[in-house]
Length: 189
Image 1 (cartoon, rainbow, N blue to C red):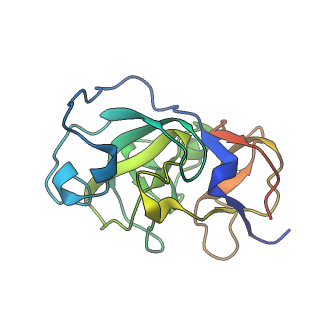
Image 2 (cartoon, helix red, strand yellow):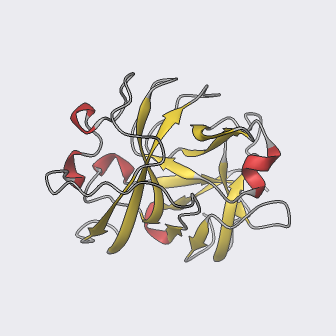
């Protein structure tokens, strides 16, 4: 089946990234998370990689519910990463360096995936969605569709390298070769 998409309001992600530091700064606003002031898309590391911050998404736009962001380093991209791009660990040894170029099957089988909240530069640090609903109230660039392999059904999904001609990470039904990265409320379009 051909590559396809699913509306960002129809999926929720599982935070499979393990325990890490949690940011408890009362001045850290979810509405500023995509800014360089929040340490997003910067060459210098503003937080320890793996740091998480959690918010309750009001759902004025999109689904209400919890959402979790994780601070990661961006590796080499196969195509420019933009908002709603699915990323996975760059290799079996670089868990907190992510890319949309699926270079290692271990990354896929782990169930680890995250979602870019905006465009981001190679080797820069930034915030990625790693759990919960898509936070369109906080990051308007995340309104839209996720890329899928064209075989996604309602239920569990994982990250897959099966997107035609590019091997860009996408959402796909869970198989024995991948871990669960989240759940879809419907099939892809």
